[in-house]
Amino acid sequence: MSELFDKGLKVRKEVLGEEYVNKSIAGADEFTRTMAEWSTEFCWGALWTRPGLDRRTRSIVNLAMLGALGRPHELKLHVKGALKNGVTKDEIKEILLQVGVYCGIPSGIDAFRNAREAFNEVEGK
Image (tube, rainbow, N blue to C red; front, side):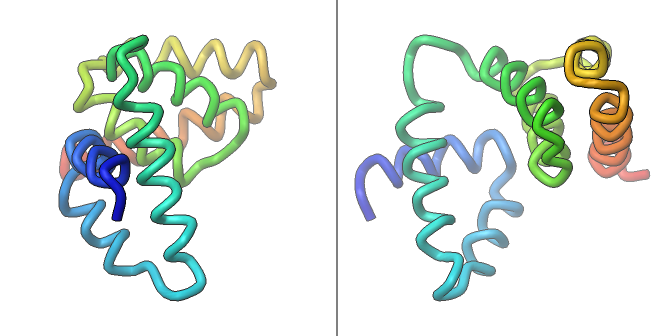
């Protein structure tokens, strides 16, 4: 693996949790491995380690984009990461309200549903 992959793996584990990342990597097969490696190397290694934005701000941007795009699995995952990065539940609510207004109520409703599931998992409910 490259140095960028190693940097990305470190950040990815810090944001998403070591258990989740280890499970994700272990679950990669011959078909999915390249995408998993690219995601770690380029998203987490090349982008998340850049100095231009802090992790909290990157989390806020990600929540808005993932909610707008209707990517429930990734949104749920990044809600958990955003909480680790210091984004509050009230701030997440405001971000997702903005998604609902600018991207459509169905997008907002789905985003809220997935965020609530993420909160419940984090809180052990």
